[in-house]
Image 1: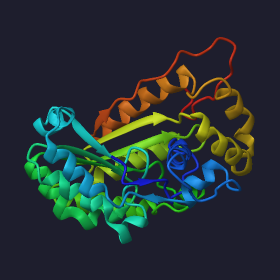
Image 2: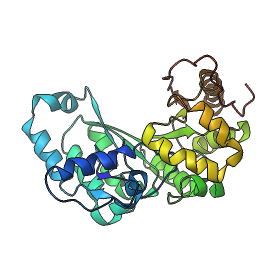
Image 3: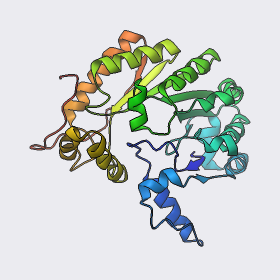
Length: 298
């Protein structure tokens, strides 16, 4: 469930930029849409946020129908993910409150399990609804945080809340009894993957009250590549050739990199008392294709 299409935070690595073009093309089949021809799709994604104003009413209607397709959700056999292709608590949520309305609709049905992903401390505004969801079914809030370095975060995620604000949100949610996890995703090769930086990040989220973490290396789908690789060339030119070589034929970092990262974050999770959610997907390394090396030195 995505309450918005597009996201104003403008994260350089965002994998969901395809969603905007898809939605606009689909809307164009039913009538005129705003003219974005002068704006590349990756930019339209963060500049033209589309608001699903009727989402709460549609969720209520769908669940009230008790259609077969929703039966597993109502039984608690399946869960719903809020924010898979947008941040549900981006700035538009302050005005439109679509995410809150959707969560209130889910909370009307006992047994519904909700997972929510956000970078925004605005999620704390809805702690009353989150508590109700947790009491009647199950709830996990996953806060995305890839670095504690405020200046670096501003370069990578130019309009996202600061790392300090996210840590405060984690602490406030945890204090309210909400199950909070942290997404250290994506780990950016050569940028956010140093041992000291990852260790400090795991230590900080554990201290704030997070119960679990997930971590995986950057994946670059075509829509994300169009934005990310030029950004690397501008912001980290020394890494540009290595990134081009690594992601020239696929979306994943090399197998050795992924395995080394996985082994290290497993050790960090044990050290800081965090449960580690595993992300091991990825193709084998192609022979003869150079890849980025992990800053961990493995």
